[in-house]
Amino acid sequence: MPKVGDYVIIEGTKVGAQRREGNLVGMVGSLLKIQWIDGTESVISPGAGAIRIEPRAASSKGSSKKAPAAKKAQKKKKKKKTGGKKR
Image (cartoon, rainbow, N blue to C red; front, side, top):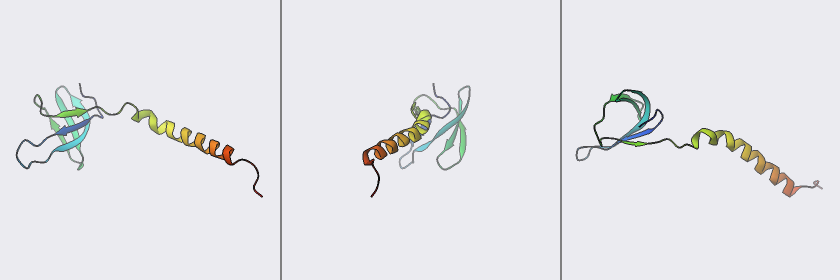
């Protein structure tokens, strides 16, 4: 079952047709509201096998909060290694 925030890919169905990619921004029943990469939005009711849903990464929520703490820890280690007073 797709969830809001998932990445949506629709392959072209005709020769030379481009794929469309975007983010799922809303759902009502079987209708999916997608914001495409170009900024436009569509409401679609896809048939079986018409779209590919890629779930958003589970670690993406917490990674931005953990990154600054990790950077601080690296800075502390760096300071300890250099240590001592400058002459």
